[in-house]
Image (cartoon, rainbow, N blue to C red):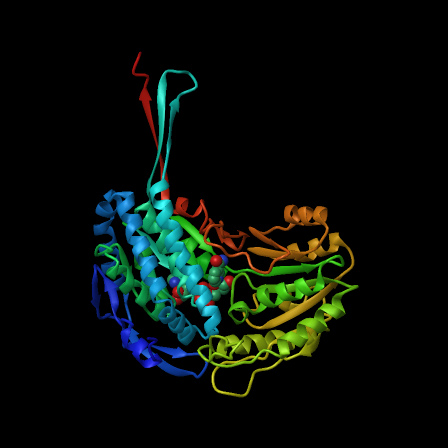
Length: 489
Ligand code: NAD
């Protein structure tokens, strides 16, 4: 039987999770988590300060050796049991994600499937950590190469995918034998708290995962990052915060994984299947109400089809019902807060003053919560402000191009390099694009690339390292090499 919103919220822990215990925070007051579709409070949760942060790190550090020594199969089984529990409660997780983050329930269900898959995928990877053994080239020794856990990790996650951003880090860390302190975003911390309770129920030993929630992120995180017991930091969020964390991490020479901002180009060539391109564009633009690092940020469309593409997109965008994510008819939810909404207005206004035009939408919606009209902007001039910043909302700027070389140059004209999308039916052109687009990932004739079995990550200022795939676990492993003299000599 499905729970009501009230019953669900009553089930979610509201305290910090440190050393296997739910404890109150020492920070000032508490944190109010609000529903972005109404602006009304959903829950009050604990506020951690630097003392709680160090207590959480101590718990992770104390648990590290025993956790690293557990049989890989045992670590795998705990992850698998957590996967099964999340699956059995997928409706609860989906409703919670939708409530605190605002995305439509159907998308929240998609996040549960996607996010939970990292637990299953890494439960399978835990038992496949291997090394190698061989002769030295001179034949005088044997060389053994092993993989071992990096050590205690600090994970900081963003608000936009409250489950998936946590499991993408917890899954590989636990599989590799690392313990962790995780700090979810203060805007959407409830899902991580429910996940911690689920890990506990699945039999995770005390101290292996510790959760701190805080509204003083910088001050509370800094002592953890400065502490020599920490060996790894894994961050998903904006490039500006990522750069600060890299600077802080340099002092301890920490291993770092950085999943940062994006400015994805979405290229549509004259030979593309236009309807498929529009379907892909809607997905790449509107997933998560446009608030995804993988969101298509710049539509770069051949001049011969630009008007038709824009009209088709505008027709679909303007027909999307807005509402609370948990309402079944909602196709587009709110953006996360008023600041995000004001930023969208600033970008739309700047585009118009720089020579672009509004085809549909273009302003805030006059109702409770933080809604912005799905917007299509046409005749956007290369160099416009909106093409240089992460939009993070349901706004689609369309730029025209004439030649393939021009399209590639426009696409690569950004300091970001997370993902690119390209629609063409010409195979040779498709392969040229894959080689020339300067991004860690490319969707060729698709608007969706995320998959737990694939290495997710970017180049340039979009980050360092990869999450998911065969690569994901290596972010939490160190290579140890051993030289052994030839036993026959
Ligand atoms: P953000 O950088 O503002 O915050 C991310 C996290 O960092 C939050 O938990 C926040 O509390 C914390 N934080 C902020 N300042 C900090 C500091 N000085 N020290 C320690 N922690 C600090 O980002 P956001 O607004 O939560 O998320 C949106 C951003 O995340 C976008 O730029 C988006 O592209 C990016 N993102 C990237 C990926 C990816 O995989 N590349 C995935 C999702 C989101």
